[in-house]
Amino acid sequence: MTTERAELTAPTARVGIAGWTYPAWRGDFYPAGLAHRRELEYASSKLSTIEVNGTFYAMQKPASFRSWAEQTPDDFVFSLKGGRFITHMKRLRDVEVAVANYFATGPLALGPKLGAVLWQLPPNFAFDADLVRAFLRLLPQDTVQAEALAARHDERVPEPASAVGPPRRVRHAVEARHPSFGSAESVRLMREHGVALVVADSAKHWPMLEEATADFVYARLHGDIELYASGYSASALDVWAQRVRGWLAEGLDVLLYFDNDAKGYAPHDAMALAERLSPTG
Image (cartoon, rainbow, N blue to C red; front, side, top):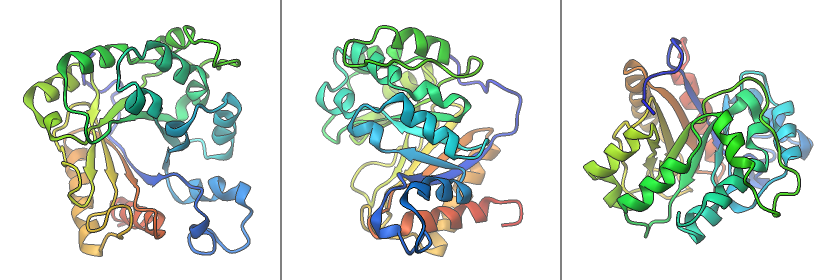
């Protein structure tokens, strides 16, 4: 798998939020009185992408993915967190059936609205070349491969979902929280498989790995001063806007998510950064 762009189109940057169902956002980001069932519709009218957290904690149903797709604009995309059963419990070992189950539960039902799949590793997961290589080889590179893999699901998936629309590429990103993933061997392995190493801003809790290893950059902003809780200042957002412009200039697409949701900063920071990146910003 090469990291060359699949289409001859200009690189794009999408800025969004990690999750959208937060009671503290009601009456702040979400207008007072907005029905909870309309929160996704509202959030997707303000931002171009959302990272789904629920897929990390439990297997979803195909109907959920279809509903999310129906509630959002045509040019909207979701990124999905890979299941913690795969990354944190199995720790990438013997996970073929688990990954098959993951794709059978409905991600492919998003069709063109599937942005990327994020595989977040625990902080104590050190780089193991053989283990990581086997996992990366398992990941489907397009929807045809993903559907074939999903067909190998087990009885835990009673209603497997089929891919929607023509064949499309499936992008993957790995958020590694152990510094050993910054090694030359790790970077080389990610590049060989076209998988992005996540650029994570985490108030120095975990390493920020900034090596581009795919034809897109996946960034997660957890808070630069206080993990999950601090907002980004105007000057900090200016710095991130410059970083994104630099990636775009290199021909890289960008998916960037604010995960500083604890005090409600995430959607406001996301809109502020998106405004800086707009043609009139």
